[in-house]
Length: 222
Image 1 (cartoon, one colour):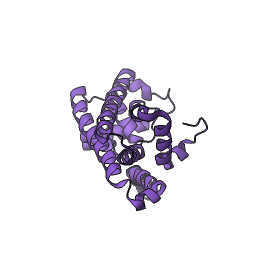
Image 2 (tube, rainbow, N blue to C red; image 1 turned 90 degrees about the vertical axis):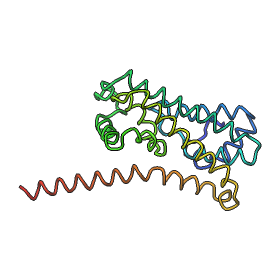
Image 3 (cartoon, rainbow, N blue to C red; image 1 turned 180 degrees about the vertical axis):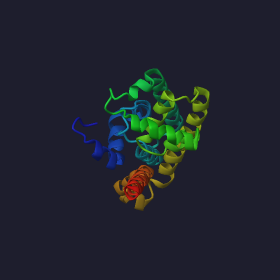
Image 4 (cartoon, helix red, strand yellow; image 1 turned 60 degrees about the vertical axis):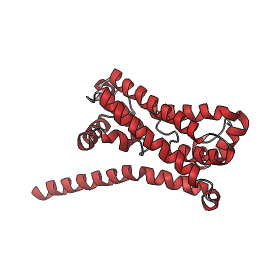
């Protein structure tokens, strides 16, 4: 992988870069994508790494290159489960003081919103989070900071990882090499990213509307 590789370029042209990695490193690509998924899900400071797009692209590459789709699914499933395992225990180890303001990237407001999300959706939030960038990285961390027991977290972690990995790798293997998708791969990847972040945008928009309505009511009362 070139040293001057731009992350945005890597994500948007991930199919091309994965092919280069395969040509250069051969079957080590299994371990490379394993490491990317593990770090993206396991370290709360790495939410910007590719997730959904990587799974879709490696599935498409496997379908045409001879890489084993079952081996990829199994390896990436393990990486996703282990990543959340590590992230959960980091959150449990750091605890609520992590959101005291000492760490700039960990804001108390994020903790409160995520805890409210857990309160609303319960353990299913861990499954939902798998399909939302950034939230995917923060959810297990916050679950560790909060009061969710590990056995309960593990059950939802396994289910979410299975649906996420099998869904995206399988979709890539089935549809990634269709001529239209192959000829417009960057646009498809961009579409996946947009669809993935839409829940975040919707929640932000809803929060803004709620804040505006609250301020409006306060102004009217005065």
